[in-house]
Each structure stands twice: as structure tokens, then as C-alpha cells.
Image (cartoon, rainbow, N blue to C red):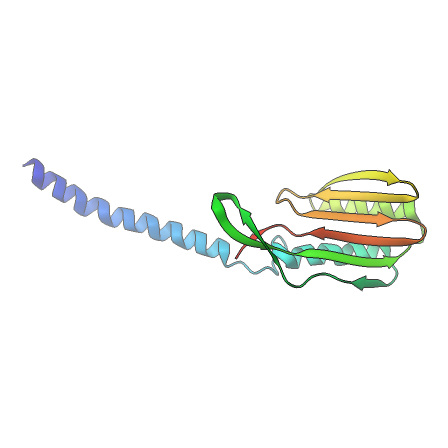
Length: 154
């Protein structure tokens, strides 16, 4: 009698386990298939933030962003890609005003911003909750915008 009960239970559990695995797989797949052009993911959102920052600082910019991603690992040993950026620009019209506006922009995007004075240069360093990094250095002579996007699954 016990054997028959175990067989019936196995017959019921097996489809439930398969259904649970299927649902988990679909969820993981949908998370991994999200385009990097989505506003909260990968290089697309990171590039858009850099573009917004450039517009606030003003002037002409030399975009030296690397289009080839770097390998990285996110929790649970999932392989991913992050994108480095480097942009060189002219000096802003008003350093203090620019620093304030960029700080507001970045905090509005959920980044934690720190300000440091290095001789004649003001540096803003920002990190996001997904470990993206953005650095802006401005002075009366030039501007540099650099960083690295969050690591997104391949």
C-alpha cells in the first residue's frame, strides 16, 4: 500500500516540479533577454546618462567610449559585460553651476555622488546600486567624463 501511495505522490510531484522549473526558467530568460537599450539596463542607459551629462556641461566632446564590453561576473557566478567610457570636453562656462547641475542629474538617477577638490579640478564621483561608476572632472581648462556601466548578463 505504501508503494502505491509513493507512486501516486511521485506522479503528482513530478509535473509540479517541472512546472515550477519552467516558470523559473521563463523568468530568468526574460530578465536576461532585456535589451541594453532599456532605460535601466546596461550600456544603453549608461550611455544615455553620459550624453545627458555632456549636454549639461556643454561644449564639444570627443567620445572615446569603448564599444567592446569587458567581461565581468555578477552574483551567482553569472557571466556578464560592462562597458568603459571616456569623453573629453571643453571647460564649462561656470564650474560651480555645472557641478551643482550634474550632481542633481546624477542623484535624480539614483546615484550616490561625492565631490572632491583636486587642486583646480572639481571631481564628482558617482556610484549606482548596480555598481556603475561615473566620474566627471571639471576645471576652467577642460572637462573629462569617464566611468564603467553596470555589469549586465550576457
